Amino acid sequence: MAKRYLLLDTSFLMALTDIRSISLEEVLRLYPKATLATTKSVMRELNEFLKGKRRIQARISIEILERYKVEIFEEYDDEADNDLLALAKELGGAVATFDLELKERLLKEGIPVIYLRAGKKLVLDDPLRLSKGS
Image (cartoon, rainbow, N blue to C red; front, side):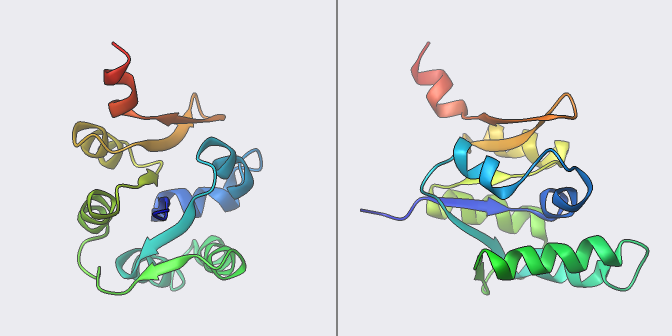
């Protein structure tokens, strides 16, 4: 059986440290049996945050990636949003993001997105599943 991927973006990883009501366990309940992954470009963004005001969140985000053995796609090392979009298409995976612009781009391309609705509840928006049901 093919692997099922859930890609994590920088905004989502940083929010894990800020919003106590969300966790990777909750994300995996929405998108079960997924392999967690991200791109080298997201890692680069997190490393940039280590130099600034949000260094504590960035350090915790990197620790979360290590603790959950998140797969990092090294060949995706350009602009993070574009990399996540391309990788999600290639793998047929979903993306967890709190970046509204990226969310809209992903949904337009038919890629499932996990995001925070009303600032408190994680939801999975799967445009293909929704369109098949209508």
